[in-house]
Image 1 (spheres, one colour):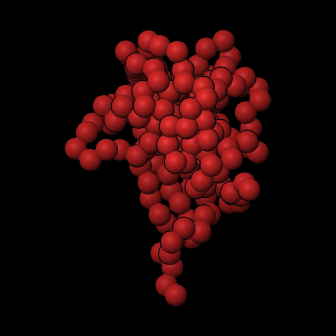
Image 2: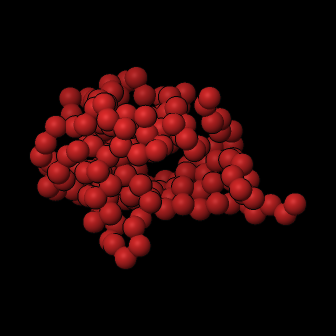
Length: 161
């Protein structure tokens, strides 16, 4: 069977941080199964990246995004067997959520691929064993107070059971 080399996805994601904590989701399917991830998702047809991010972050977290700043776009590549693909390239535009209203949803099933709403996690507790590359990028941004625009390639990537 012929294999295509790279499956490319594009998504928009919000970084919501406070007091050295990051607001994250927990995925139950896909390459980030059983890992913390950022609220957001695939770009909606016909919508701007900003409008899609506001919609997806609000739907996932229950928060009303009032202000967000685009930080940059990077990609994460890693081996992943999906359909006829051997690799995934996840292109992500990140936004820092500067201001919002509401209280995060912490215990509702929002989507098929999310076990819970969102939870606050100490950034020191986020690592490659429990987090998506997006979360690790958000952690880097929080620690450095700077968004470094670099693509990342993982030679080995494990989908957690």
